[in-house]
Length: 70
Image 1 (cartoon, rainbow, N blue to C red):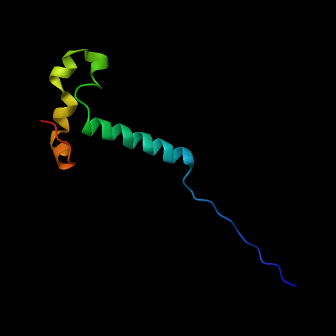
Image 2: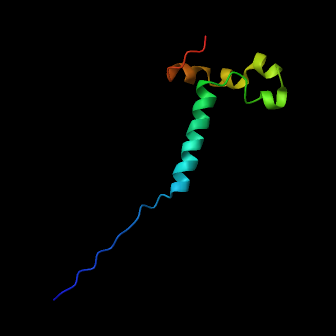
Image 3: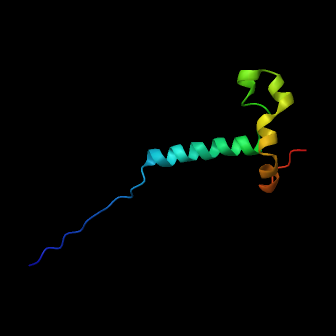
């Protein structure tokens, strides 16, 4: 009688790392696709909606990803 050993290995990627990556992806999607001054409005107030710094920074990437903005 010979006994065989079976080794069970788990993936090296933890569930916490996947969750953090999903949050970073979701935040990046919001910034590129939907931000119209919302991020900086926390600091700058209503002026951020007129300036739209992040919108202007990501404008070409927004169009390349298929998000209409004007």
